[in-house]
Image: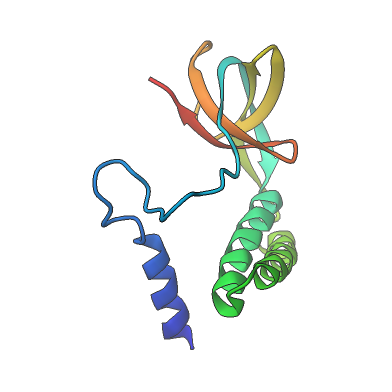
Length: 144
């Protein structure tokens, strides 16, 4: 059982490696899930953030992948995400009952202010792209 799960996770990790050029490995017309926003760093300050939040997000992601693979449908993915989030939150409370250093970052985009927690310090006015998901900022990347 474990060997099968590990093989599936490895296959998912390398799924896009064989594509040609810079195109993603998609077939036919795809539904755009989120559009990246572009903004500039306004301020950053160093803070301590609870690791249990990180565990919850990681648990939800792993649970969603496992549920989707095992059930092969959206319901399995959703159930896996919820179960993974609960397991991650509980594990975070017991295992990661500490904080991690982070940079609370203010980003301005289209006259709106967003707050994100980044691992690295960036200079003011650095151009970044990001995705807003349910009020949280994810997938932050530096634009050059």
